[in-house]
Length: 261
Ligand code: NAD
Image (cartoon, rainbow, N blue to C red; front, side, top):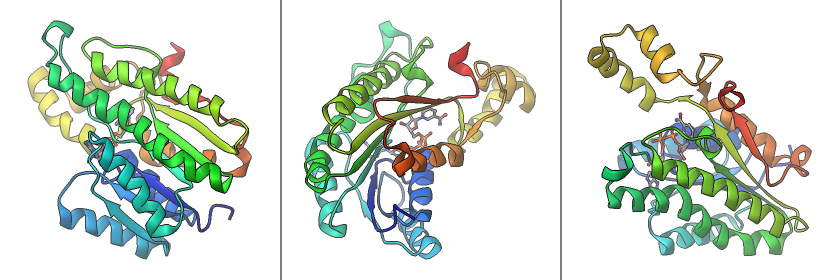
């Protein structure tokens, strides 16, 4: 397969969607640099599992996505360890929910840094190597919230709309360099984080599990089904292939119809 031997850096890949990207790329023969927070032993277990499950090389970068110098260092680490960073997936993200007039300034700053500025710093650092080698794939995890808004998520929605704009700009700049830049916009994705919210919401709203899923979590998602991390990761792997070389500057929804409504 064409991706064998390439290298990907996936930010925020110690859990959830990012880990699924890393595993799906590894399954396609790509060496991966994983990144994100968590218990050292859990991260090492995931790293080792990628190597043993897929017979590729996996390395870990602890770079903090709020720190530009560490982000540049993560790209340099990927290039030094594997000789190249061919694929960059900007995925690290956090959320905070609050009315605008009470929104904590430090939460705004953290969300803009992690969910938006980190993609700028990583792209900026990865593009010179991609240009030199004449091939690259840049993918960012945006969100249905890059296209539509919901109340109380000012920073997250501003950051995700920013990712959509950054994606288009970078795609145009690199259009003749055999480097594509796209973003993927999931709706509600089934992750451990989502699963853990269910019992509390059942209690606080006096609802059954089905009511919480259909009327709270999936209220905006017409299919009434969660997107899976594997579905999001499969789309990213497709975007890395030759079949996707003419897809650039796109914001691809995978949201059960959410943004069609
Ligand atoms: P998650 O919490 O499971 O994963 C987030 C990852 O980011 C983790 O690996 C975490 O350690 C890492 N991270 C957080 N702060 C960091 C920092 N400062 N530096 C480095 N890494 C950091 O969440 P997820 O649901 O897998 O989300 C991944 C991405 O997908 C996010 O950008 C999120 O906005 C987006 N997204 C998620 C959903 C959903 O329903 N889960 C929907 C749309 C978009």
